[in-house]
Image (cartoon, rainbow, N blue to C red):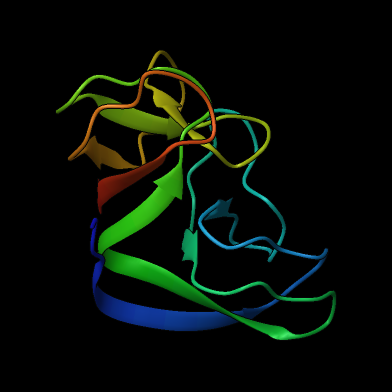
Length: 109
């Protein structure tokens, strides 16, 4: 079983319905492609609710494509973890993913 190790959990008002284990932006929306994330959503959160977000530590994130162990990670347009290619990095993969929608641990950075 994969585990999380949140060191800092903050909250932000959800600007949309937020799913758990996606990168969240600094404005409370799903993180955009190549954008820096505030962190990873810890719980399903409805529009207007205060969403818990892991900002420091190790978080479980859904993959958006195949990811190699140790790869530098960025968000795709859906807030999922993909291999870094441009823009802002959001951490490093502590697990490999063979495709989309797999849960991987990400050391947030």
